[in-house]
Amino acid sequence: MKLRLVAAALVVLAGCHSPARTADDARKQLAAFQAAPDAQKQAAVEQSLARLDAQVDELDKNGDHVQADIFRHQASSLRTDFQAAKVARALKDASKAIQGIGEAFRDAGRSFSETFKNTGTNSP
Image (cartoon, rainbow, N blue to C red):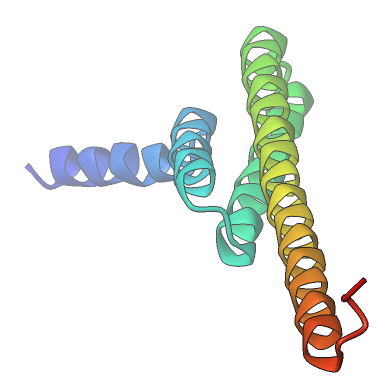
């Protein structure tokens, strides 16, 4: 009975540090970053990807090249999706900045127009 409990505990502990689990965690963190990007979520994705890379290296080191290739491909796919999410975030931020500049110019134009109307320099 004790042997079964110990074996079950080892399986659970091994699963917590498996590349499959890490890849799943990275996917979840990436989805959270895509939904509402911020620095904390970005760091979490980066940490998961680094952990997955280390696990892939460990698989290679232990001679499990097939599993290493599978998880290396998953890591590459996740990294591509992560880069796309960061680009989308940057484009959204740039769009907001451009919109803000446009609003600032519009407000400045109104302000100048009001100034000229009030000084009477706009009359023929």
